[in-house]
Length: 306
Image (cartoon, rainbow, N blue to C red):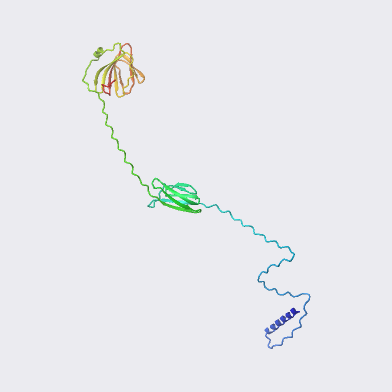
């Protein structure tokens, strides 16, 4: 009932406001309000819904109802596996005091990764793929003073290493050994000078004939390094060899055989034989007559033992 009365007042006020807004020339009294209609018993008008300001808390569950299931926990976040530690490297440049690069310098790196190398023609060397950490570098070379340096390599970075080396001190070469003076020339041995001599060979042969003896050698002349003699052969002679003298033979009687360096050659009257030093030779008679040879030996003192 109260609600119906309030609704009739609202409708009357609205009608009054509309009449004043039309602007009639003369004001007329407002009509008397109509009696309010009896309130409906079958349906009540729904009150206006106020604008929502904040979310209302959920209504409590009725007594005796089962509690609601808790909300499912979100799935765990899968983290990507940590990447392997990144490797680093070194870019090494070796120079001298003037700034000129030095090629051919040997470099040894000792640390988590062992490396070694040599600078190229531009004085540079690169060591890629090194594990991070502290490294000890050693520089060696024939033309430089050895040097060591400690550096730290970080993963994912290339470390620039600039090194200046001092030149090695060049030792003066030792003085050349004194040249030994050549030994004084050895004077050639020379036998005593002989006297001029002229002999008759048949007379010497008759006076000093071999007879039935195996052999006989008779001295004819001796002067300086020349020895002349007469050799008579009935039986083979031993091997003869003169290391410092040459010898020549001339057949003046009989026939025979010459064995020179193992090779045999027949000899006849008036044959001449020249045997250089170092030649091994011997003689043997051939036939019934004694082999008679005139021998001239030259090159060693004539008075040396034969």
